Image 1: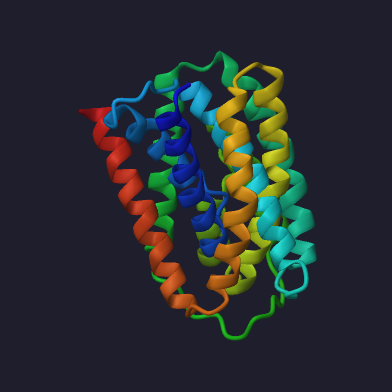
Image 2 (image 1 turned 30 degrees about the horizontal axis):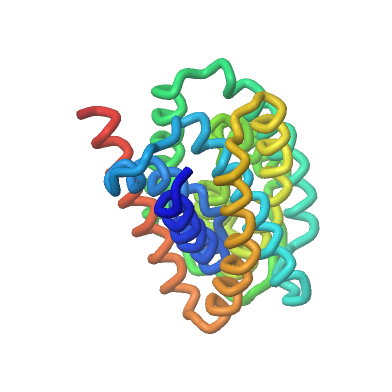
Amino acid sequence: MNTAFIITFLLLGFIGSFSSGLLGIGGAIINYPIHLYIPPLLGLDGVTAHEISGIVAVQVFFSTLGGVWAYRRGGYINKPLFVVMGSSIMVGSFAGGYISQYVSETIVNVMYGVLALTAAIIIFIPKKETNGETVTGFNKPLAAVLALVVGLASGVVGAGGSFILLPIMLIILKIPMRITIATSMAITFVSSIGGVIGKVTTGQVPYLPAVLIIIVSLIAAPLGVKISRQINHKVLQWSLALLILITSIKLWSDILF
């Protein structure tokens, strides 16, 4: 692994982790496609889809860890929502991470594309404004089922699932934006535990790139959290929507054509 490859991974990891803290996502929605496409474009030896999903799983774990640590005293992490969805998504992500070793690279890419497209569709559904920054109640059985399904699918591709959890929590469960960002970060951290265990135990994680990602994640994610507190929640929501839509279009154009 040459110096150019190492520098590239550090830069890509910083971009993904900073976005993770800024938008309350695990970073997989960014890290998966940029690690898949950019190194080959620069003439560097690429890694397989399975290896990328393993690297991304590790990155999501550490970037969400950094994000949750930054949010821990803000009062925005809703504990009942975290317990219901966090426990359910961890079971699904562990199962998905283990099953992924038997899934072809094409299916991994297709599943990632389906997740991104679903998230893009949900987030563009008109949303009734939720006033305030508190949660008065939510549908617990629905939240648990949705988290389980997201965990299973995201475990296969190495994602924490936050890029689809966010629109689900905003549009379907009607959770305020800032609580959604902070709580989804905590839920994604729990989800990533199962995903990382599944990927590591099945030998899908190349260790040097993973270590590089870890280093920048612990620096960049808290920085993104700090900046997000100073940005209007509407700007955050539309930035997330645009990011998901662009990624979805790129992935599906490659899958289909």
